[in-house]
View 1 (spheres, one colour):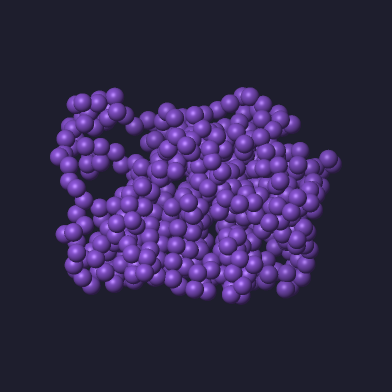
View 2 (cartoon, helix red, strand yellow):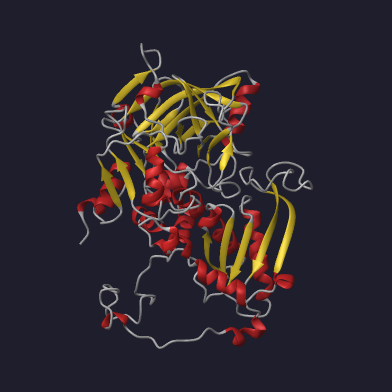
Length: 528
């Protein structure tokens, strides 16, 4: 039966939470007091962080903390998208088809629309920075992930800003924001980010850049914002992808204190300006030398000189939910990995229609560094096309570091199956292709001149293609052992409650949820 909520669809964070409450095992809530400084993330590490988080961890439910120490009116949500199954539930798509679903959203993009103040739910409560006693540190419980963090961070702050010269429209991107004082935050830009280009334009004119930081959103907005160039070139408004996912535009309203827009249904909005020619050390208050744990699984180094955002106001819904994530967790994999998959899939399908059938941005790479690509070979010429697909992928998503190519009989979401293909369908001296000296990502600690003196600067790397596909001419020698198709529920109904009448749990009419890598389902890597 389809509930009224499902009929209405997910349109903001609160309707997303209702969707999860209707599906057992997807959301838990606790009223036990929790300290936002290291403790909250420490709890969720065991409950459902997953990803590249230090073991033991697991993929589990989202979690709402209703009693945050020092913040009697605040709630903090973590892990909303920390499983592929849950993302599928929230985006109305089977988990295995999210790649194609996201790819279609780009083609179906709908631009955001401006609405009047009567729809500004994000402005039900207003805190202005010029009010006596204003202190963002006392209003919002920005968490830290670890004891070594440079400071409290807003980890899911969607920054919205516009080209100060009016040429390249509006952009949205998630950036890490470290709280530095009562009305100041530092903002980290990885190289090539479009809002940083806006900032540089404004700074060259000696002007601040107006921004809004939007938190607590429809998950379609967050995940749509994680596409990157060339899929979303400079000047492309990624909010249009969320519109494509939902079939309706994202609604924007005017900020109250700066000349910028914000998302009308956001739980929390921080308004402000990025100041020209002002820099601060990320860890100036703690001197830890560390920023926060980033998606590769390591503590990122604290930056010595970051741009500064001066906060002019905080607006919220009544009883707001502050949304955060665990830096290296599975939520990052979902947020950036599924757009990565869609970008690669669309590019390969445009170049070689129907040849690439599935793409998975693996958890081990944080959704960025490792892609598994499934190809459909029909001739000997396709041996070369498989490697061409890998090159297309590297050209489409600059931060991918390693690509594994597999055949149609391999489950790309099952790490054991992918590793099996690498052991039996690959010879190191024949099937590994290395492309040196390519732009990568500055947060990989191996992409530095200290690690490899041949590298010119941080964020340059060798990229590797692992061709674990069987040669087409030898395809008959690589046929997997075939078992009789049966209905296992006749013998073990408790294990296959939904399999009655099917030919097995992986038949087309069976379970559409991807099986995760063994590293996230084995007892040795879970907390029971």
